[in-house]
Length: 308
Image 1: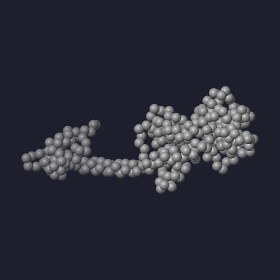
Image 2: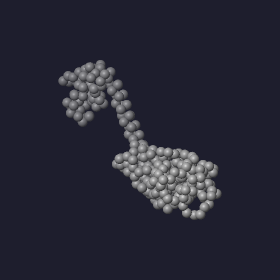
Image 3: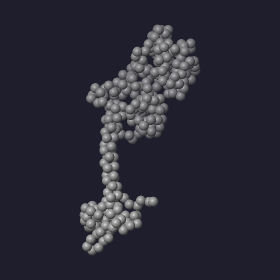
C-alpha cells in the first residue's frame, strides 16, 4: 500500500481538530485556507474516509477523524523526537570529527614521526584522538584514496587520480647488522654489495614497496644478492638481526625504532637505494585544525630525518 500523505498533512489535520476551523488552522500554520483544504483532501483520499463535516456554522470531526487523531499525534511526536535526536548526534559527531584524526601510515614512520608529533601537540595543550591505520604502503594509498583516512604517510607516490603526494624526505635503504658482526666493525664508509654474498640476508617480502625498490636497483646494476629470509615488517627483520639470524636491508628511518636492540647500521654503496616518504592526501578534502597541526609537525620533524 502506497502512503500518499506526509507530516505536513497530519499537522494540518491536527490544527483543524484543535481549532474546529479551517480558517483558524490556516492562521496557526501561516498558510492559506485553500492550502489547509488541499492537505485535508489529500488525507481523505489516501485514507478513503471523510474526516470533517463542514457547515456554514461549524466544522465537526467524523468518527474516522477521532480515530486518526491519536495516531497522528503519536506519529508527529515520534518525528519530532527523531529530528531532535539526530540533530544532537550530528553536533556530537561534528565535535568528534574536529578532535579526531585518522592517519594511515607505514609502520616504520610511527617512531620517527607519529610519536614525536603527538608529543608536540600535547606540549601545546592539545590532547589528540588518533585512529592509526598502520599498513603497508599500497594499503595506505588505498585508505587515503577511499576516504578511510584523513591523510597518510607513505613511501610511494600518488597511485590514484584523486590523491596527491607531498614529498618529505628520502629514506635510504641501509644494512642492519648484529653488533660485533665483522661488517659492523669494518672500516667506516659504505659497505659494498659484493660483501653481502656470504651473509644471510633478510629482505622485505615480495610485493612490498621496499622490496620493489631493492629488486629494481639490483636489476639495473646486474646484482643478485642471495636472500635467506623474507619478512613482511621491518620490526620483524630487526628482531631477527638482534638475535644474530642475519643482516637486513631496512629503511634508514628504522634506526629510530631500534632502541634497546643490539643492532648496528651501515650505509650501502652503489647502487644507492632510497624511497621517498611523504604525505598523501585526497584532492578536494578540507582539513581541520587537528589534521593541519599534525601535518605541520610531520613537516618539521622530517627536516631532522633528512640528515640521519
